[in-house]
Length: 100
Image 1 (cartoon, rainbow, N blue to C red):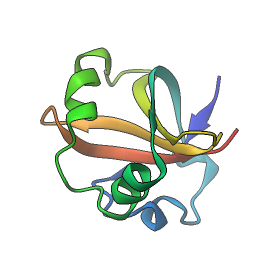
Image 2: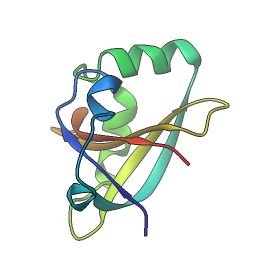
Image 3: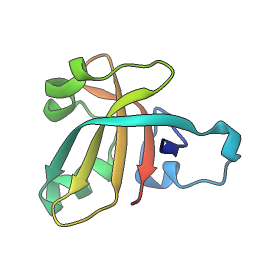
Image 4: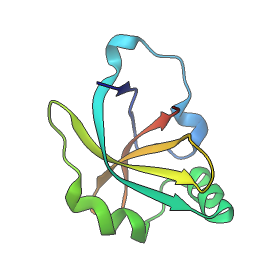
């Protein structure tokens, strides 16, 4: 099972790429992948506190538990991205950097 280090309420993608202990990583499952155009993805990763319709649309699929069920947000044509655990329905509550 894959694991990732989730950060509470990050502002930018740089908040997700910090040094951390491996023991702090959580197992996750991607329940939906959202592919964004370059400009939309760049807007998302530089302002992760804004409400996003694509998060609200898929929030009901997500759940915390032994394995976190989350959304993977990627730029079209790229394999890395951001794992999102929504909070309040339409914004990022927790997020982790994802790289294949």
